[in-house]
Amino acid sequence: DGGITQSPKYLFRKEGQNVTLSCEQNLNHDAMYWYRQDPGQGLRLIYYSQIVNDFQKGDIAEGYSVSREKKESFPLTVTSAQKNPTAFYLCASSMAGVDEQYFGPGTRLTVT
Amino acid sequence: RKEVEQDPGPFNVPEGATVAFNCTYSNSASQSFFWYRQDCRKEPKLLMSVYSSGNEDGRFTAQLNRASQYISLLIRDSKLSDSATYLCVVNEEGYSGAGSYQLTFGKGTKLSVIP
Image (tube, each protein chain N blue to C red):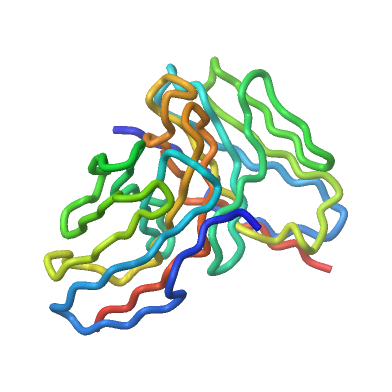
């Protein structure tokens, strides 16, 4: 089955620790995205990548980092510099030249 | 600032009812419009794309009014399984197909279909 996988589903960390969220897709999509969703809020774009070895900051990139070494993988690191890291993190992908994005199941990160 | 505004909801409707959601967007040059459905604590899933004058898929109809900059979603004969939050999504950069990294998401409208 083709799709987007994110792991883990739930993640708990202590304040001050960096944590990396996994996102893998086997849809052969060129573009990949990271969003965060907070209760009662719309999705906000953290980072996106349109091709391998290239990525761009979204609206709320501070305190996050990404890499895109392979077409199918786009991991997100939540660093200790992110002031409010507890959120629902969603990874998405899309084909080049197509606007529709498809989402993975998400990772719920709780930092205490 | 890019804005996508939706009816705040929640909408509580009986089974079989017809319900409509509206959404307004700020950029008159926007070209791409979508409705996503999000179940509680799950990821958003694409429900419909709205590209020109509207789109229909079974019980769901999406309309686009460029002059007034709003999109609507109509659900006929509501089912219990339609209960979810409906997200209005707009490509606010004014071009289509060149990369959807500028999608703007509304906060969603919650629908509860009651037996």
